[in-house]
Amino acid sequence: MLRSEATSPADLDELGSKSVFINVPFDVSYEPLFVTLVGALTYLGHTPRCVLEVQETGQGRLARIFGLIGSCRMSFHDVSRVGTPARFNMPFELGLACAVSLSGAKHDIIVMDAKPYRLDRILSDYKGRDPLIHYGRCDDLVTAVLDVFAAKALPPVRDVVDATQHLRRAAGHLKQDFRSATVFRPTIFRSLFAAATEIGRTRGFIA
Amino acid sequence: MKPAAKTAEMPRNKKIVIERATVSEMLETLHVRPSEVRRAKLALAAVARMDQKRRSARVAAKRSKASASK
Image 1: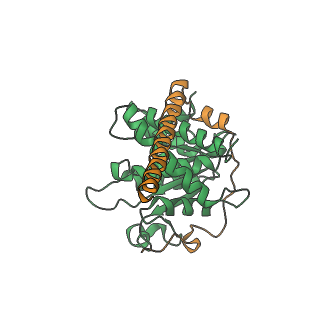
Image 2: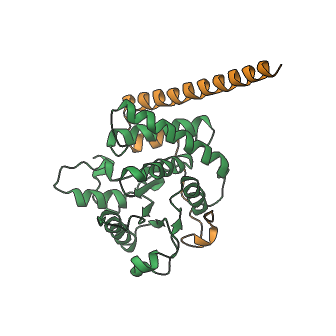
Image 3: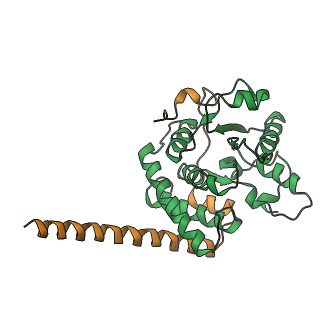
């Protein structure tokens, strides 16, 4: 069974325990932040997973998304897209992640926003937890992500920022290569991740 | 200028410790195909070529500036 076809949050195996689910808006203006997040997590030795892995075959999609979230040790949810047209996918997947966590699975949830103090107003059920604030800027996102993890052998922020810039440039070339207007395609996502592992390996972040 | 991201805005006080994966484990987890790895390497090579071009242009500009000031 493919890992992305997992349907139970209970199957957190050895590889899943190093995976991180990312739930972000798939729009062009978010691309730099998405690439930055993929890069930063990869450089820290975590495998980014997202719904791009879950194919649009219709039947069982929701169960597969739930299974994918459950197969990850933690998840990042960006709820910064609050304008019109309304985007329900991010809060919906955040709800699924909360369900995974409440079901007793070991699953940490990180919520991100672009503006401080906004989350309390737009998602009052989640009050009491401070989100990561990235201000819509890639470098701040790196700082925020690094802050989440324990400092055991973390690479310096400056090095990670530099490496994510490198990855963003590679993402532009990948889009050209695949003749795609966006990086939000399964094969580009995997290539992007492969590029991030290569950058991380050559810079000594991961082995 | 907007303030930088601060530790005070962290989701929780505790830091998260999760085990780190090796490159081969990571590629296995995402089922990355060899063709995708190849394309990733080509993209990185293209970035390196652009960097090299930019460096060469910078050196050439410096040289021409120096020779013009002589």
